[in-house]
Amino acid sequence: MTAQPARPDQPDRPVLPHPPLDERRVDAYLARIGAARPAAPDLAGLRALQQAHLARVPFENLSVRLGEPIVLEPDALVAKLLDRHRGGFCYELNGAFAALLGALGYRVELLAARVFGDNGPGPLFGHLALRVLLAEPWLVDVGFGRFSGLPLRLADRGEQHDPAGVFTVRDHGPDLDVLEHGAPQYRLDQRSYQLPDFVPTCWWQATSPDSHFTRSTTCSRATAEGRITLSGDRLIRTAGGERHEERLTDPDERLAAYREHFGITLEPAALERLG
Image 1 (cartoon, rainbow, N blue to C red):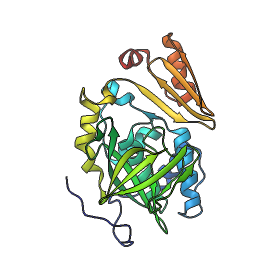
Image 2: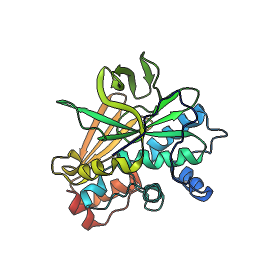
Image 3: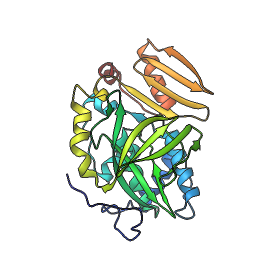
């Protein structure tokens, strides 16, 4: 896996090499997330697009649990969101969002990250996030589950107050650590990469028994009040710092919850495989 070093102070370097989405797909994508087309590729538009994406497209690992192939190509990622009305995990969600942003005129790059766990940061390419280059570089992430609702300033080392919490970005050698309420979330490699660079680790995440994505099912999205998540047969709502959980023991209830809260229609046989 190779990549050319990229620095935020190099404004003329190339961005994503694939052709942009055509106007028909851009319009369909904006309709999918319920967002208006920005008048210009600016920060206000980026903020609105990120919030809309988080509210309408779920973070979910259903494809992993169902054994469906995950194809890290822009057209395939966008088709999953638009034609199948599905979500995905980081490689899919941020990969598709990068394609939309690029088509709307934003200068966007793919960044690799190490996700922090109990034993420190995991392997590189364990997460895919986005850097959007405006007057300054911004961290954009619609594929980390519960995370910042708005773009974060990558050059700011102070506290950044977001609807989802307080975030900070710290230097760690050539990398950047992103923290939420003081707890490290992931370590960003500041070089830019391309989607094929993430394929091996994406495959591992989707197939290894050691990956947490293969061990349990989750489907989650942001709401105006907080978050709603279906984890196995547990429907979890958070609002104002309070958590409410109910068990959906009836399969029909779970199927209805996927439809009502996430817009995902599943066959009963698929539900049995999700566990």
